[in-house]
Structure formats: C-alpha cells, structure tokens
Image (cartoon, rainbow over all chains, first blue to last red; front, side, top):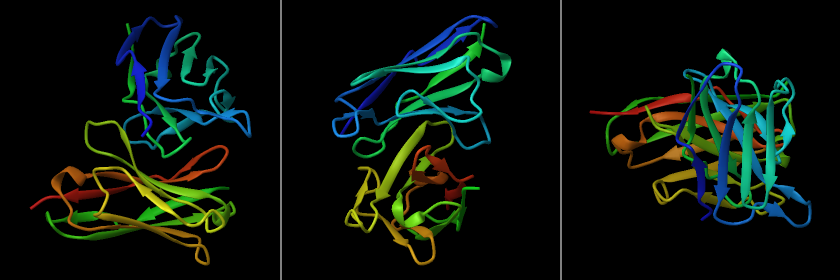
Length: 112
Length: 117
C-alpha cells in the first residue's frame, strides 16, 4: 500500500514565523483522468475531530485562514503556515485517498 | 448541513464484539465512498477501512491490523454506515470516526471504544 511520510515529526516555531511541513508518498497521488492529487491535509487538536485544511492537495476548505497554504503534486507535498499564530498549535496530518486512506505519522507544531 | 453521527461505542472485554453505526445526512450518501478511521490514545490517525458506493461495486478494503476481524457495510436506504468489530484486542481501544470521501471530506465527532478486562 501507499506509505505516507511526514517531516519533521515535531516543529517549534516563534509566533509570526513560518512553519513548513513536508509529506511524501511512496507513489504518485496524481489521478490522470481528473488531474487532481488525492491528498488531504488535516489539523488535529485534542478532544476534537480532525479539521480539513486542504483537499486535492491545494484546495482550501471554507473558513481556513489564508496564512495556511497547501502545495505540491505527484509524490511531494507541503503545508505552510506563513505566520504562526497561537491557535495553530496542533498536530498536522496528511492523508492519501488515491487508493485506501493511509495517513502520515503526524507533525506536532508548537510555539518556540 | 452535512452531519455524520457515530454511535455504539463503549467498553468491551478482549475477544468480544461491538458494532458501530454512523448516521449520515446533508449529502447524497449513496454517492459517497465511506471510511472508518481511528485514533488510539496518544497515537496518530489510522485508516481502518472503506466501502465503495454500490455503483462502484460496494467493495471493501481494510487496514492490515483489522483485516479478517472487522467488517464494514452500508445501508443506502437508511443513510447509515456500519462497522462490525469481532475478536477485539486491547490495541483496538480508540476513538472511531466515520468519514465520507467527498469534496471536501466530512468527519463525524467520533465514538470511543475501550477494550479492557
């Protein structure tokens, strides 16, 4: 099955600074017929279900602040928080849905 | 408004069985591939399995740790997804989420399953 690998496992960033999370898949997530990448980014806070940030790798979910951006194609994807806010402290996951639904291991984002 | 509401969680002994349900509303359930995802205490998100639409054959697929023990089914007439869990292990203790592979994806609030003696 497709293996999803995120890096780093954890990240400490100063308020207002940039946070960048990488997600790599073991095979391409680009669906040839739709020309879409079957990748979702989530934000997970304790006691809450995951919140969708981006689907199709870069389509922002309604209500997600524009300091968040999703990019990439094929096997390499990036989630960027351009200016970290206190409320962004969370664990972030990528998930492929090209075949099954495997997740990356998660990246914990904290304030430095 | 899209809603996915899980039910059926609880405490069960190792080796026991439990059945979860997920009631869907606010979207065309029969057109959506549906999934179960879980998160064990202190662990990451883990995809459990999915079921295709009837149009796509209604096929199922499962993660290795649950294959042969868990069964996903759906009743499109009731807009409901099911997860039958047999031969439960302590490692199956987790919050179980029902999700829809829609654009955007949709998630329920989850239901807690505790496997303990």
